[in-house]
Image 1 (cartoon, rainbow, N blue to C red):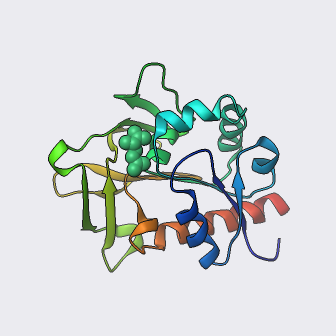
Image 2: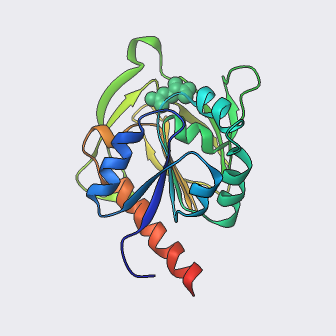
Image 3: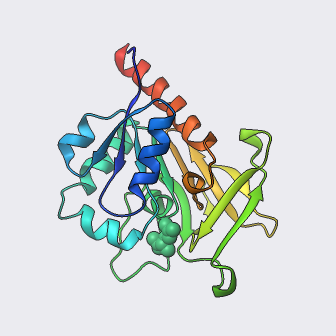
Length: 203
Ligand code: GLN
């Protein structure tokens, strides 16, 4: 399909506007997604950072949990940052009572995994898949990927061994916030997936 990619930002809670602005600056047409009908119209979805337990709690009454799970299984490209990564994880540690995720990424993610002293920090991370320069990453009470199943690929590891970015087919999950540090390459990678997905669907 020709034209600008049409992507959504899940807009139940979190830093929705920052992602929408960044995607628009990269030439995407952006819809804020709160309803299944809106999800059905986009060719990719960003799940923003925020508070995963709140996104989960809102997704269920909004009737979004099952449609998002179905879309992920069908191959919809999804980029999840921070709370969004948590929402993409198949397995969750330190969730609140009853907390659920959408799943799709074959990983175990631990919420709020950095110690109190360093729960928010900014640093440069080498991400081989993105090349040079290093990624400037802002961590804000971010999660860490503690276990990676055979289907998921690790994209970034901190010096202490913490896994902070993973990819699996149509899904990309990162612990930090590229949208607030001026880093565009993850969103570009996501939009490349969207273009592939759109071409497959149009074929
Ligand atoms: N600590 C949050 C959670 O558990 C994530 C923080 C963030 O998205 N910046 O969902």
